Amino acid sequence: MINHIKKSLELGAAVDKQITTDDPQHLESVKDDLKEKMGAPVGLHTAGVPLIFSALFALLSFAIPQLSIWDTIFGWMEWPQHAVFIGIIITGLVYCLLVFPSLTLVSRGCLPALKFYLVLLLFTAVLAVLYLLCTIIMLLSGIESHMGFLIGAIIGFVFILASVKCLNSAMLVKTMAFYLHNRVWRRQLKIHHRQLTKRK
Image 1: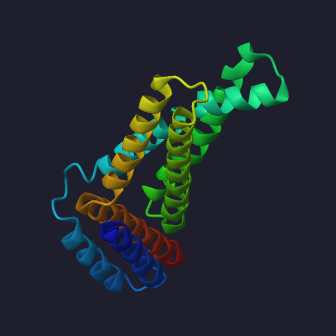
Image 2: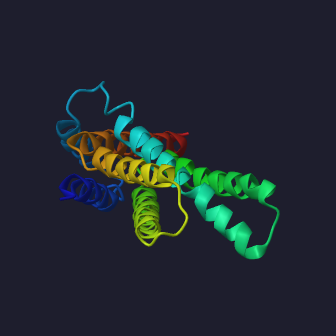
């Protein structure tokens, strides 16, 4: 079901083990293997399209239930309702501060960053599912709820499915191969620079 995500994680783990060497020839062979998995040197995968769209859909899915969540919190705490958007803005900023730096690190071939993003995506999926279930239960039980909330919850659920679908694609494997290839290349440059420094 999530075969391509598993392949990307396995690819990252394999490179993590192989990149520790200082042998340029071995690193070159690692790069060649990654080139085969990457395919074309330029394309949608090199632009990071799967990750960009995944993050966009995840952000939209996360944003949809925020009004209901913060409206409920402000109601419980008896805080002024006109300040609800402060809570929404704060959580939105925190979410963005977690998503975008992690994706930046993923683009540098950092495996822990990809794992962190997947955990964040799982949290967003759980939130979307819970919001959908709560909205359905409220409508069925006759508790005052607007039909627009149900539509929003369904859209949020569709968005998180689309986010996961973007990740669980063959293009993500190619994207990760491209990022990892560049990481190995940077490692080669560091070794080369170190050797030149020693000669001086």
